[in-house]
Image (cartoon, rainbow, N blue to C red; front, side):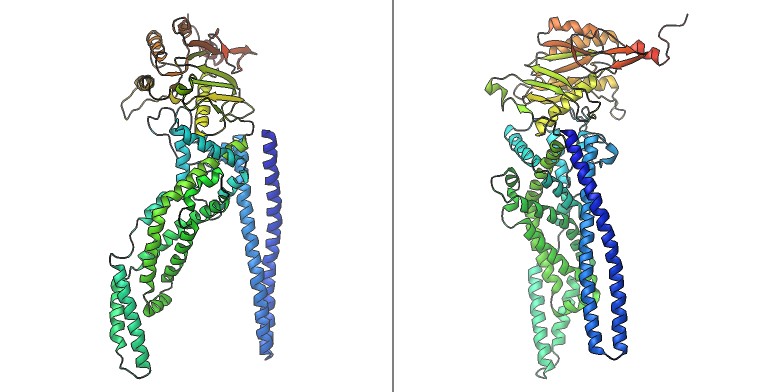
Length: 610
């Protein structure tokens, strides 16, 4: 199925290339025709005028002008279609890169894992070559934050997760909608829609506290000036209009905001333009009642629509933009309080948009994040939708569990990915994973963790089947020392393990799925064994279950002392003087080690010199 999906996208890209090439040739032809029409019109019109055939010259000018405008309009439309095709092709090309794990062709998105997060860094959720780098197709900062939140704040409330997954599944069947949502956003620029910056612009005050009073006074003065000027023009009164006009001008210069109003209007227009296009697209496609998309966009239908507000804002901003033409601006404001009127109008619209903006951005963020997961599902048709074993394992009597078959890591290419089965069930259930260096222990732990994140976010997982109960993830896989905090590697590891153990003592919350790689690797062999035995024994008594990997084969005998512990291992074979790994999980403790073999293969001494 994945190959079929790849072939479909490659076909679309080739078709887009052909259309772009054909359209570019036609556009070049239109460019030549526009030049030819201009020159022909110029020659014909000038010739007719020189022959004193003025009526014919006027007719020629009008005819060639009409033809030129019609051709230019069609040419402009053609260029817009070519631009749209190029963006469409780029979206499809990025999809292909996501399927092939071509990281250099997938645009990086901002976002770093929060410090002290229990699993984000360990599982490569954020940053370059991460899960969100792979699947983030959002077009706004709020959408990106919502998507990140779905992965970082787990588990979600069951009802929220249910609503979210219904929306993701619905959008998976509407992949064209998801891609066109991204397309609409890219047509006006490459930068994402920044709701935070727009909110800051809307907070900027415009006008004055007594703007309505000043506007009323200026309007009255303008009417009086017009009446007195008319009376003076017909000789009915002396030039009293100069007095009222002088007061009008004085107040105008006292209240004129100069270029500040124009700059604010331009900034607001720039921030609202792309948002208007995207929200308008959502409004048009969320009209069908009873769908998950309509429910997610319910905030857009409350009161006046976003497009109505944003169109009013655009019209007001265009009216204010006459400040860019000083002579016209002064002439209009000399006749009426143009700036004051539209400043008041802009203030009203700005207040209305500011009130509704959080709702609009919330709906957009929900659809964007769900669209990103839906695109991920569409691009990976071989992935499966996970099955939740119950909203509350205590209420329905089921045990905390993660059971999966052919579970693979979604950040590894399909050609090199190796899948394994996982069966964890019941509090205190622990798999002790032993194995040689580079045999796949760390990757296996990350595979379980990242797929659980996908499942609890509402996305499909890289597995043949996947069943689970709500779990709080806690990892100790990638630990770093900290010079700023004065922490050594070992002390940082101890603090992380203490956090995990404390989490397992929180009984009212969902159980902890702990993933611990190379436990106590920062200390010597004797103390590591003593500490590991005590720590694993204590873990088995808490509100949690999970996996612990180690190099210490001596820990394998814990299977006799800890009821829920089970041994499993990865191993290697030696072939043609090199180590070969199959990355397959096998039951029981590891029968081999390879550290000395690796040192020998790399030319290091493995025994002291005589």
